[in-house]
Amino acid sequence: MTAADDRDPEAKRHAERFQRVREAHQTEVAEDYVELIAQLIEKTGEARVVELADWLGVTNATVNNTIQRLQRDGLVTSKPYRSIFLTDKGRGLAEASRRRHEIVRDFLLALGVDSETAETDSEGIEHHVSDATVQAFRRFLAKPKS
Amino acid sequence: MTAADDRDPEAKRHAERFQRVREAHQTEVAEDYVELIAQLIEKTGEARVVELADWLGVTNATVNNTIQRLQRDGLVTSKPYRSIFLTDKGRGLAEASRRRHEIVRDFLLALGVDSETAETDSEGIEHHVSDATVQAFRRFLAKPKS
DNA sequence: ACTCAAACTTAGCATACACTAACTTTTATC
DNA sequence: GATAAAAGTTAGTGTATGCTAAGTTTGAGT
Image (cartoon, rainbow over all chains, first blue to last red; front, side):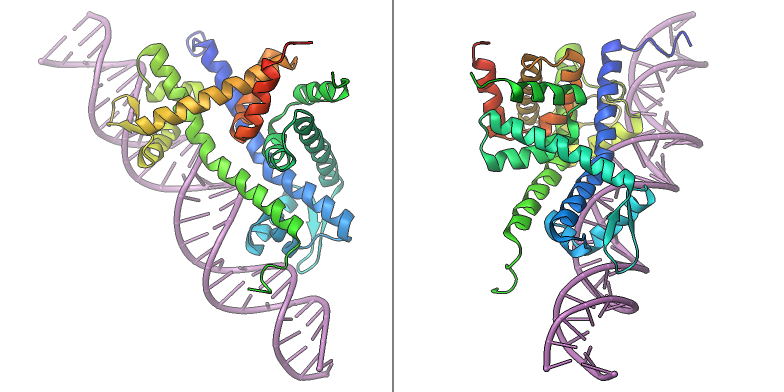
């Protein structure tokens, strides 16, 4: 394997970063769903397909589809025509997502971004901030404001 | 249309945000490609399939596929077995993406994030920051450091 | 000018995520 | 308790994004 690895090392690093972004993509939907499911359960006592569809802006059929994948992946449980529950794993992911989401949103607000933008952008950004960046956001939030 | 719109207005706002994130997703790949194509052309004089594949960490076949879509969308031109060129539209998108990407990366660095993390996270974040947030990042960068 | 490796393309496949349309189950109301 | 509306499900479709395997074209070196 002398020949195989003589790629431009910069290209290699670049490619690795992209691969990480692609991986993040695969968990985005799952994170959004479990986060929302947790919120709905907290707020209304249960999470139903129509509610999820309403909050996500997709059809019932799409939600159903996704819920099946989440179930396959061990994040939720649900029986036909019944409401949806989080597994321990799902609850853990929901908690972590919620915390990260809040920090990103609060950080943007602290930076002077208007609240509607902070809500929207944090929704997209939250899935792409590593722990190191979250820590940096936290440090900024902890700092006195001048 | 009295009945159709009596949804929870909070749900409605939430759904709209998600729709925006979903839309951003559709342009992410295009942005990454044209940004990289512009860089390769600048650096080496041309953009070839193998190079793109190498820098993106995907196969040649995947690049080919994507290039065809970009061509359909008017962002690049290319003839079989030849190198890839940006259209005016593609160049415009590449420029805008590069600028936004740089600001996000510089912002993270200024915040104290280590450089490898800044590179990786900015790659994911850049597609989800609105103009308003970019402005906030800019303001922060312009500010004297204490 | 031949030859062969590298580059590129094509075909076929898989998964995620979205949709509509049609159907079934549950539930609320009379 | 019958029935209609609401909720949920299923089937079928489409696009984006990825892959492997097999083929074609180009171009470099002899």
